[in-house]
Every structure is written in C-alpha cells, then in structure tokens.
Image 1 (cartoon, one colour):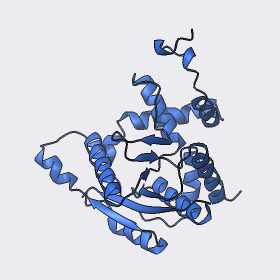
Image 2: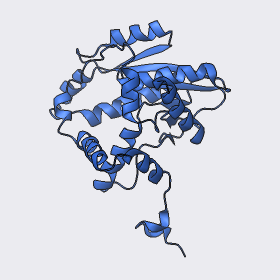
Image 3: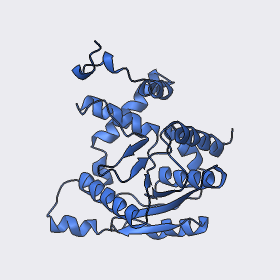
Length: 247
C-alpha cells in the first residue's frame, strides 16, 4: 500500500472510532513545523475533500520568537499548498529575560503556546483543536505517567479542554511514528529549525521514555500493536483503584 494511503487509513480509523470530526466543524490545526504536524495537515486536507461531512481546517503556527525558528519557510509552504494559515507570535526570549528564567522553559513555553492556541481557536470560531501527536507519543506518555505516579493516563484522541468549549483531537493517534517518518521523507518540507533548548531536552523524561519504547520494541517486535490493544481494553476492576472494586 502507498505510504500516504496507509497514513490516511490510520487517520480515518482514528477519526471514525473516536468520533473526531462532525458536520460543520471548524478545526484549528496546530502546525509546529515538524514532520508530524505537516503530515497531519496533509491528511486532514485530503480527507476534507473526500469525507461525507463538511469541515474547515485552519493551520496555526506558534512563533516563539527564537531566531532559529523558520516561520518564513513554514508560511511559504502553506501558501504553496493553498492552506489557510495564521501565525501566533509570542516573544518567549523577552518573557524569559523579564522573569529572569534560567532553567529549561519547556513547561512554561508549552503552557503559553497552548493558551495562545486556545485563544486563537476562539477568535477564529473554531470548535476543535487538532494536534499532531502519534501513537509513539501516546505510548511513551503513558509509560511516563505510569512510572512517575501520575496515573494510568496519556494523551487521548478526543478530549475536552479544561473550560469545556473546545475539543482537543489527535487524528494520528493510531499512526506509528515510523509510518509518519516514511511519509514525511516523500515531502519537500521546510526545516523549522531546532528548539533553542534542544540539547537540554535530551536530558528530560520524554526522550528517555521514547528510547525505552524503542528498546522494548527490540524484544517485542509487535509492541505498538499490542499496546494499542491494551490501551483500548481497560479493565478497571483489575487495577488498584478502590473506586472500581467489583461488588
């Protein structure tokens, strides 16, 4: 099967199973400039032309204000694809200087970015925010939560935001990263530029659990399909939460 068709099939299964898209939806799609978000935009625009329901897609990129970030290349690519695209600017370096912030600002940046995307979605009258996380992200996030005592949780494919006025959807939730990587290799994508704090990110939990997932895959070649099966078959009464004691 053609790699794009394979990716569209995985996204279609996700959208159908978890009811991600409905008639009349206006979807703000977060476009970070990485391969995952570009792949998601290509899939969503393909499905928009084929789907039995009508929906709109607006790509939005958060510009953090770092000189390494290639916002021009991302915007140019969107114009070439005839995608509607908006840029949300926030001067992260200035904010860090103002707060005298010396650590790795990932949590702060993530919170600011998400808040800006929520605000932009409301301004553009969007009812859904599509993010490009794939199954490897979901699996490593689950392992991280499990081993850090944060509960049996991960990034759901269709969840409400805290205020309840937006749905966060992840159309690539059932797509493995390797499939996205193979598809992205067929595209002439712009280089978004590495994060200013890229080297520090290598010391964090997320990369550790991503590498753990790869190491486990050596021993269990079908690990991802097995994890998808397990995460889709939650048996609450057999866990340790006393709220689910079967009586």
